[in-house]
Amino acid sequence: MTQEQDAQAAGTAGGWTEPKPTALLVLADGTVLEGFGFGAATEGVGEVCFNTAITGYEEILTDPSYAGQIITFTFPHIGNVGTNEEDIETVSAAAVSGVRGVVVRGAVTDPSNYRATRHLDAWLKARDIPAISGVDTRALTALIREGGMPNAVLAHNPDGVFDIEALKAKAREWPGLVGMDLVPGVTSAQRFNWDETEWTWPKGYGQEGAPKYHVVAIDYGVKRNILRLLATAGCKVTVVPATTSAEEVMALQPDGVFLSNGPGDPAATGEYSVPVIRELIAKDIPTFGICLGHQMIGLAVGGRTMKMHQGHHGANHPVKDMTTGKVEITSMNHGFAVDRDSLPANAVETHVSLFDGSNAGIALSDKPVFSVQYHPEASPGPRDSHYLFARFVELMAKNKKAA
Image (cartoon, rainbow, N blue to C red; front, side, top):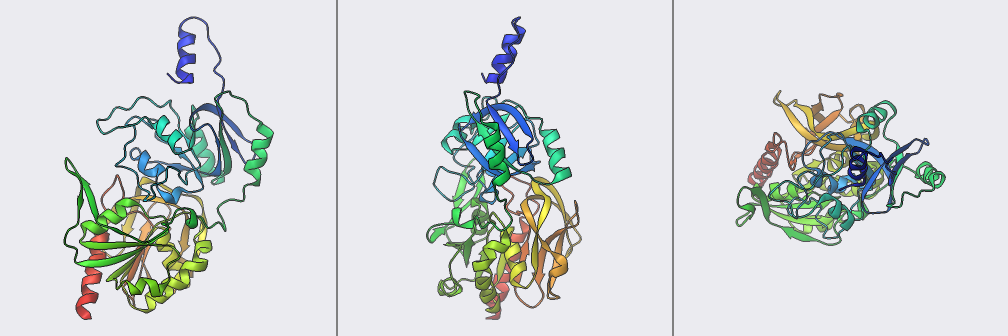
């Protein structure tokens, strides 16, 4: 039983014992939220965002795009299906995570799923991620919607002893994500090949045996399911580190280049990635970008990116495909966006968020290049946007035929 459940049991037995907080979420403005700690007994400092997905918390917690952030889950039943080794999204084998902390409403229950191999509490301990339960996540979400994503410290101490003033100072002094390049902490250390295809029940993951196209994926913090869908679409995938030069990419003789998702301020990452992308665009190589990769393309063609008020984090975001008129439900995770007003005439807006009207996709009218702000691989869902991988393959086929 958790401390919260122990306290409730004592209360029902006839003598109520006020539970002692074992975790605190301390915001930069001095607000202190008390709760019950689980996961690693440590501190994590970062930007607090909220995620509205009701499934896939393990995928979310291993998405490198969340580096530097404390995730508040608006769905109350987090942890109920446990964790397993198959749903991890980072390609890194390391047991650490870029996520700085986890905030949930209810106490985490024992796992209730046939695929579970570990309790969420033990899984978080192994990855050195602190967590807090018992927080009014509806109120915290409302606070973020009103005031934006705050910097904060999440501290977990089983003894319940905290230096609150020191925690307030740490939250206040953390510089925030603007200007912060977090890609070096999540990118691959070396080049590797990928041939695993998407998961199907009851077989699990498959393997691509006869690829038709070769894609070089520049890894800014890539998710495994993106690589799986590229392989499923018939691609041999070579993953390269974020600092790989255009010459090194072209030396691999790709049919297409993929620019991955990733964390941090795109303008900071763009200091070294934008010149590479500009060279690749100039070579007319079919290019597909997702999330940070989308923002990198926007910067490479002369556009700007901007920090969002509350960001987009969830698996229920409606996006309109302006090329077809169709609306798709998408998975999103980004705190920065491309400023559409800064884009040149050859960067055509292809997708728009129906939540706030922000840009969600572009395509170059004079180059075989396109990108989307959201996550079409959407592990664990929704699957509305898988067509974009077929669109990328069609672009490579057309380019190959023309050559």
